[in-house]
Image 1 (cartoon, rainbow, N blue to C red):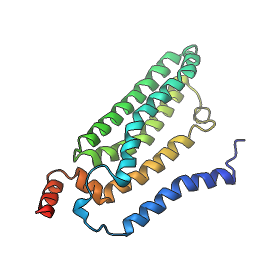
Image 2 (image 1 turned 135 degrees about the vertical axis):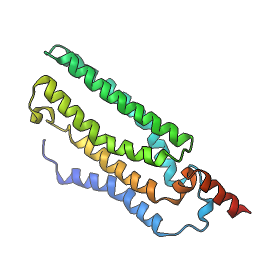
Image 3 (image 1 turned 180 degrees about the vertical axis):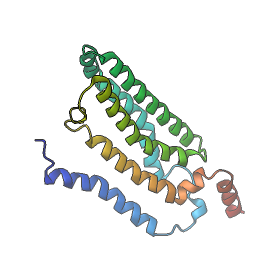
Length: 190
């Protein structure tokens, strides 16, 4: 059961490959009126939905870990481990909310904040693994047992695809471009 079968790889390919295919295909066609591409529509709407759900996903992950946290509390240094991990996840949650607010406010800083959020995925995972391993004095192989690595890797890959979209999209540039985007739209409509 621990092996990654060909069907798992096929599912991963579909999850990653289909959105990449459509993103590349839509990017290959130049828009008819680039100035008209502004606001939350198209692929940006999907990104906005994902951004709105990401803090909820982090909270759900914290909630689903509560039983594991209760088991850890009985171990020596268990409470320190639990509080450290919760603090790390809450810091990541704060970053997710900051990125979400920047997106909803159409802040020009959104693109950079979204990049930071992407970089934070492996950083939080590595810090968490090192923290748990160090505080509990457990080998890293025990901390990373099972499917502990699969979800962060998949999240990093999928978010990386969205980062590429954010930095290449005309709609994103127009929506989060600040003063230059509004002047381009005003100039185009004049």
